[in-house]
Each structure stands twice: as C-alpha cells, then as structure tokens.
Length: 167
Image 1 (tube, rainbow, N blue to C red):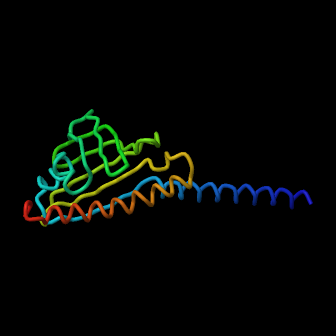
Image 2 (cartoon, one colour; image 1 turned 90 degrees about the horizontal axis):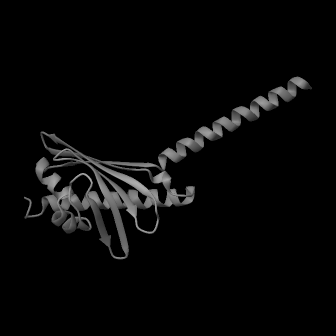
Image 3 (cartoon, rainbow, N blue to C red; image 1 turned 90 degrees about the vertical axis):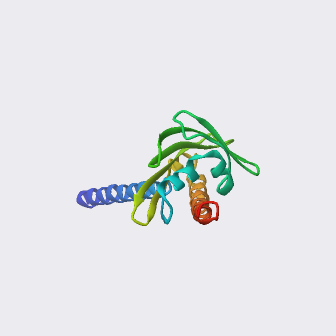
C-alpha cells in the first residue's frame, strides 16, 4: 500500500511538471511574433519606408517618428494611439522600439532587421513581450491581433515599395 502511494505521488508530480512545461511553451508562443519577407527593393528604400515619418504615414500608420535612439514617438490610427521609445537605430540594418497601446499600460517591443541580398532586402520583423498582458486570454487575443496586423502591414509595405514613387 505504501509503495502504491509513493508511485501515485510520483505520477502526480510528473504530470504537474508536464502541465507546467506545456503552459510555459504556450506562453512563449503567445509572447513573440516573427515575420520574414523578401523585398525586391534596395535596402535603403526599405530602411526609409520603416524609419521615415512621411513614408511610415503613407503605407502603415500616421506617425510622429524619428529613427533616433531615445525618440518618443506616436502612431495613431482612428481611435488607437500607440506610443513608445526608439531603443536602437542602426541605419539600414536595425530598428527597435517599444510599443505601448495607450490605455493598456503594457509595453511590448518591435524589432526590424534588414539584410541586403542579391535579390533586394530580407526583412525580419519581431514583436515580443506580448505575454506582458495581464491575462492569458488578453495575451492570446493581442497575439492574434498583432499577428494579423503585421501580415497586413508587410503586405502594405510590399505594395508601397512597388509603387511608382519607389520603382
């Protein structure tokens, strides 16, 4: 009988650890979005599109933005305001800034990495810290919203880079 109790305790212990690992993996899946694209455009054109206020405003979102470390920017779209601070700006290669949807009090981070290729520019976008939202349900909803939003954003960037102004 005592051996049976020890085995039972061991099984419960192992199951609890498996559940904890599954939850940890699920939270990581809700924490970081990674999108990659290849653009048939020079790296300088892609950099300008993601770092210059006028260009950001024409294909992405109305922007008060400068790609300067420490700059506190504002993006606005309809009733949504996003604020943050530029953390890193290494022209034509790296742009990183915090991303705070006003009213949520939650800070996430957006990172753009550009790499020159034979065919143009390879872009990697990461948005992470999404698990900072106060509940799993909210983090999951925000993850899904951001993920869909970034897909649309990168499609719009592709169209913008192909537009006559940039061709």
